[in-house]
Length: 374
Image (cartoon, rainbow, N blue to C red; front, side):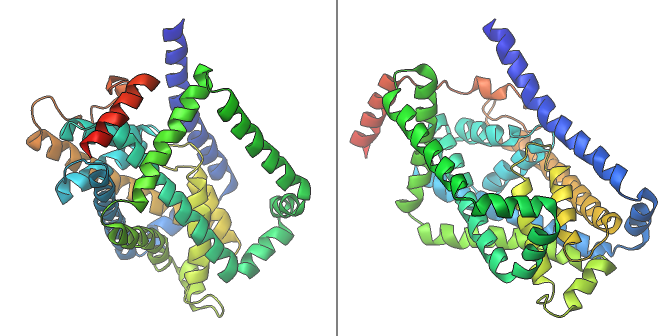
């Protein structure tokens, strides 16, 4: 019965993101003029800017790999080469095209086996890595709210979903309910720790905190901050340079009040960033619709906006496939026999081969051993 539940869970994790991507893409194609979109893609795009976008995306992954290396060294994992650090990110993003979340599991397993490190420590740094990204998304959103206030106000006033969001945020009951939910979660975690489910959740929170708090104690914190800014600058530029590739977005660059296209670029970037929280294959579907909606706030038609997202997503995906192939080749030619997983051979059940989570007792003894070692 346990095996059946595990099989059903793994199947759902694969089917749900794929189903969301397929459903949203079909809905997108139903809403746009396919002929107009294809003509824009064939004749209305300057692909030199798309190539530049691909180069910036590759650079962002290299910087992310170097940044993760700082975290890994912060928990005692030996320094890896820049190429190996980059490969951990290349392979992860390539696998996320196949199965949402698979890349995160693979890169933790890759580092664990390559460096013979503690799996839990590596997972903790991965969670810390994503937590710092969440902080950046919040900060960038605040900036977008300030600099793109007219467009966002128009969204809140003229679209039903915008009015609903505005009403919900203005309702004091929303904040009362949020506070009550947080209080309930704290009570459950504090007084029901002896239940296995609560114990697992509490253990996951501890690992996330362990991976996140190393950001404040590790060496190279200043460089970590610089690299974080570099990553998110690259992410923004990926969207912004594509504005130069199409005539309808190029017009936004020259319109008064658009700050050379930085304002609509920032809004499209923020909407796209939030869409990545929706489970999908590499963002296909949710990201396209989010960016299309953001562009519509600045008067871009649906067919043109769809062409913009299709070209950008397709070329990014093609680049990730090439980087995934490079990663597989690098691992094949540099690995110790049987020690490193290849991105092309990882399956959704690969995480099951990782070292099991320790029991609370073994976790305590491991922590004591590390403390005495330090």
